[in-house]
Image 1 (cartoon, rainbow, N blue to C red):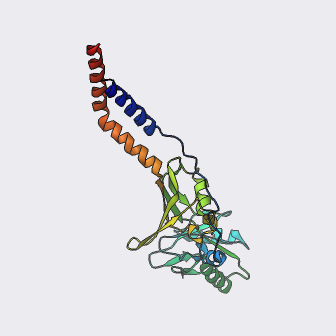
Image 2 (tube, rainbow, N blue to C red; image 1 turned 90 degrees about the vertical axis):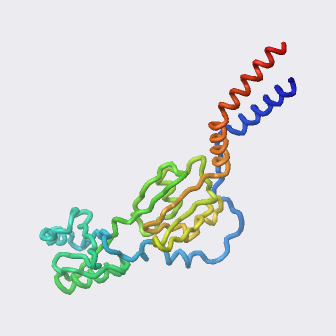
Image 3 (spheres, rainbow, N blue to C red; image 1 turned 90 degrees about the horizontal axis):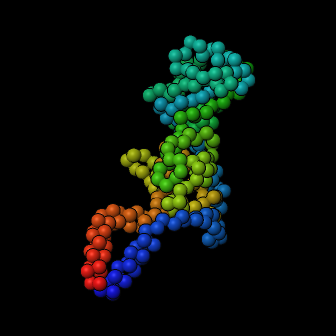
Amino acid sequence: MRFLIYSYLAFALLFGCASCSNKQYQVLFEQKKSISGDLSLQRDTVGLNYYRIQPQDILQIRNLQGEKFIVNAVATSTTSGGNAAQGESFQVEENGTVALPVIGHVKVAGLTRIEAKKIIEDLYRKELLKDPIIEVKITNLKITMLGEVKGPGNYPLTKDRTTLVEMIGAAGGLTDKADDANVKIIRGTEANPKVTVIDLSDIRSVNDPRAILQSGDIVYFAQNKRAIRNDNLQNFTTVFQPALLLFNTALIILTLVRR
């Protein structure tokens, strides 16, 4: 009987220790091995400067040489909105064009922001302005962050180059349950999604061009092994706790009867 009691106590102690959720202190950006290859060339070919404008995108356009012109001229346009400080906003139509004051419909779908800027500048120079300096921004671009991050949700891309580390900072950082070595970036079309795994525990992730975010990216932060193990133990406790309680009660009764 003593053997059974001691065995039960040992089992209960072991189970209690295993189910304790200790905070995991993550070590990020370790120098695991030397950086090889010229990543600067790869970084020069990623970012929003290479994003191709699509129908339904929202373009914010202003003339830096005279914002007043764009604001006044756009008064007759039904697709505009905004103010003089930020410029006017225009939605790209399904046919790939955007309706602009004076110059009319301009084909922009399939162009980068820089290419669209040059075409709009040339058209305004030809039709009305002497030396226009047109600024074009795409304001509806965003990424989605899910999983073990403190602030999950949708985040706008406001810069030409936004890194994964910057966006994690904007979201408040990772939770204690996050697996920093298994961050998945899902990008591509619905028919052909591609998954890129980023290891934030490696210092090379800071310079990894794959970690420069693109519009439409879904970033998923998986749970680490300890969190998964604790969740499984918690589920086990929920299922078997009544049985353990009954076993404990039976042992106590049996011990009292034997005295």
